[in-house]
Image (cartoon, rainbow, N blue to C red; front, side):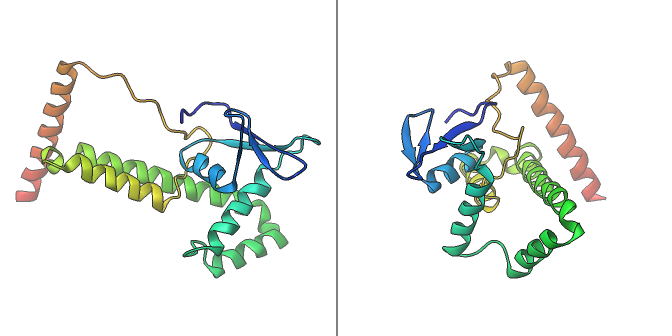
Length: 184
């Protein structure tokens, strides 16, 4: 599915059925969760009133996920969230959570960059398959978290062979420098 700057519009009918306006078909909560995991922003609106129901449905997706399988959110965290809604800390909680998830996304991106750019095993047979498995693992562990402006980026155009050679030379020099420091 191609990601765009515009959120995927889902309309809720009076029958509570959810309608994907891009594909002209009905979707389930699991379909919406899959769109989000794939990096897509969604907006769910009530067809009759025009009310934005996105938050309500996202919370419902989380609640259903928590009730099936192994929960991600512990009782202590959920208790603290409830307390946050009943105290003056309510204004701090959303900012804190947003910053925490941004840090998680950033760490995930850096880990993937380190795996590919500074790893001497990158030329080993099967490394690409192992890297793909790691990416899938990170995505699964973070629930495919992406935030606004964090949608998947389109693939960059291939660089010329000279650019690739220069990049490889720079990486090799960097690795040699690190190895010499380790030897001391």
